[in-house]
Length: 225
Length: 225
DNA sequence: TCAAAAGTGTTTTAATTACACCCATGC
DNA sequence: GCATGGGTGTAATTAAAACACTTTTGA
Image (cartoon, rainbow over the protein chains, first blue to last red):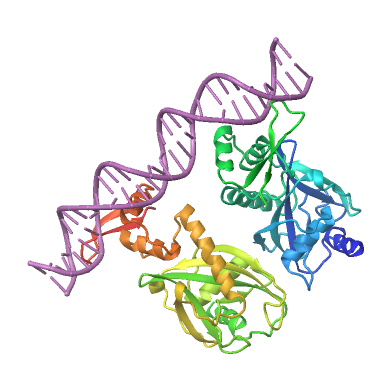
């Protein structure tokens, strides 16, 4: 299995600009760390965009769907099988890749960075979590547009669905959760109104445990079920 | 240009099940006629699904984006260039087409059927507007799923955006508009509340003209700008 | 003991829903 | 002239937004 992963990783990042017209899955992997919403970007060792930050992505095989491909990328990247992904959009501009025509279908996924240490793979010179409001200005291809589209969809889904993947730990304080919402929506929320709204959804339960090391002694909550 | 169109139309519908792995755009073309939201489906003359109703679609060329491809399909179908389209989703299941692998990216578009008489093309045995709540049960491929996804996105966009393409004529009564909304959302709306909400958006203007032939003498409205 | 963060309700405002009568027109 | 559909406003309910003090804990 490890071999398969490496094979894929290479096709994803080692042999850029060398494949035939391809369909790829690019992943906007969002994480929440130190109070900020972040996204994982990589730099490749070769290819035209080797000095640019890029979304991690992979080429879709003959025998896999684009969703399976997206999961494959995540498996290579963080070694996790069952992360929930959401399809965002297809990008088909003819000149988006300098050598060959590449069609990309983008996804977003939500993880907790602490749970998934990122291994530096050989074909990637750098790999880094960026704050969403401090993105580098050298993002390659049309990946900035892809990031913006994914973030917009995430915001939309957050309001209606209250799905936040594993952006938060197993147990968390309501203020941590509020802070996550504020990061994603990029605005301040009223503490009392936020708690009222979230709690009356009956999707969280109070563990009764107080988180240590924080002034005020906040209760830890978890998702029900 | 007419030749080009025919060439495309053939590749879309005459030579099914005979192409290499392809990327297609399938169009959920919604129309509003006789008080019902409808969708245009076609039957092809050949291929495994020749007895099934299908969404109109076309193969993406090397030198066009998927959006251009979608417009091409609409041009072939109804001869119109500048219809607004919305991308919905990519479908990549491996076995969705019986012969070759076909990746489909779906779109929806909104037109007024009366404005666009549908020509029967040679490769299509039938072409018909179906009421969305009376779809045939022999819909080919995964096109029923595609229709449902597109309709759901349309409902979502209707609530937030108030974009209804050209589903309504240039001028229309508020009750015609309400009837359209009820068809799309599939539920009854309160007449006074609907009018209040729509009018206070300030996106419509009253032409001052009364539509003849209807009891009550309703005013005709149009979109501003 | 004091600074920082947690926890908690009420009031105000805005948005949504429910509801009934008279008027205009076509037949 | 009468049946059908068009047009209109207000009250009730519900949801969202604004707002301040007390308690707990770490340093």
